[in-house]
Length: 77
Image 1 (cartoon, rainbow, N blue to C red):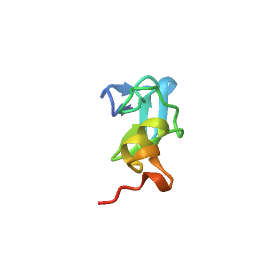
Image 2: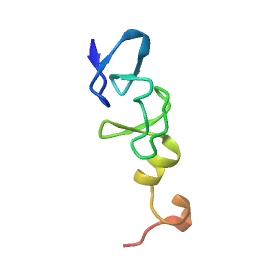
Image 3: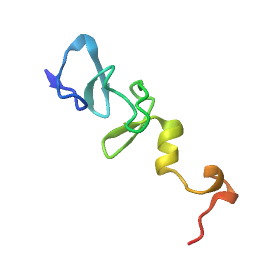
């Protein structure tokens, strides 16, 4: 039996959700930032942690600035 990376408890077959190469409880597979419950394969990953693709992953790891994309949002250093 494998252990859930979020809570460390045993994941049984009936409650298993496989994502990011690990087995999770369905209620433990949540966005690291907003805590929204995620579906396997329908989220993004950064350093082994799950994030909902919109808005959290885009906001934290996407382009910075006004509008988060497009010509008006480039940061000039």
